[in-house]
Image 1 (cartoon, rainbow, N blue to C red):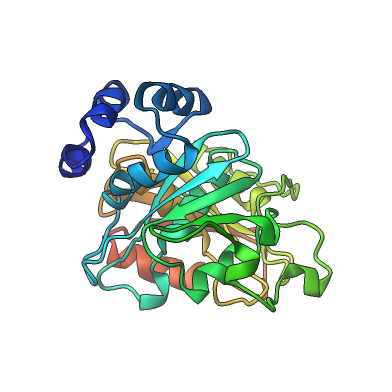
Image 2 (tube, rainbow, N blue to C red):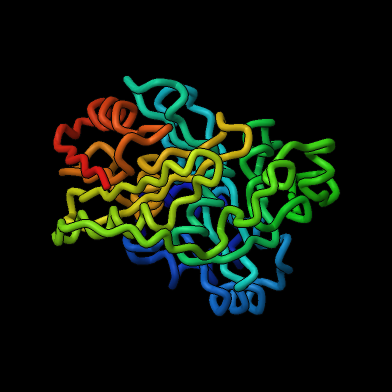
Length: 294
């Protein structure tokens, strides 16, 4: 079992511990449960979907990185596939406060990067802030996304964000988590550049058209890609670096041990990721950033 889960696992009910132990016993648990695993957990514990998601929140919160606030937030996103995806807040010492990631952003992005095409619900241990409500408003789930909080009746995103402003107000038809391929190409053939290109082609930037993507090589040699996720309100947009860091962290890797990175974006973009990416990577101890303009 990965060391970060040990304390949280010990706090779970015995029946759930027994059911989860075969899944968590290895260090490479990907912070997600397949629909088949979810079905088996329900069978063994007697918990329904909602209760199971709540019960898993301590494990999700155990993935948080909080050197600044020391405040751990966990989220569990349910895809229409039936898969469950963990998310947790992330903070980076020495980087701008704007580079932090909220738990809801983490869970949503995690699901997106694992290939999920739509979310049915999200379960959080604390009320989503306005930033996260606006971020989720970009999803193709729309205002119907169900939000579950402890000791509260389930409510839709529309109820948490009345009179919202979003992509529908700007006649945007392609929404976050819709499948896209922007068709960019590069002559760089190495694995890291190709993963960054794939992320760029997946990115969601309908307002600026400043598509971008990044790939990080971890200390283990694995590669994690991250696409840009733009928002109608701009500020809740998630940079590609943060998307890649979400996947790297939830995969059990160390954000302070990144060997190198490749950032790909359009030439002369209206919104460039280069300066913020370089500064944040530097704060994380990574100086090896290659920038490719398309």
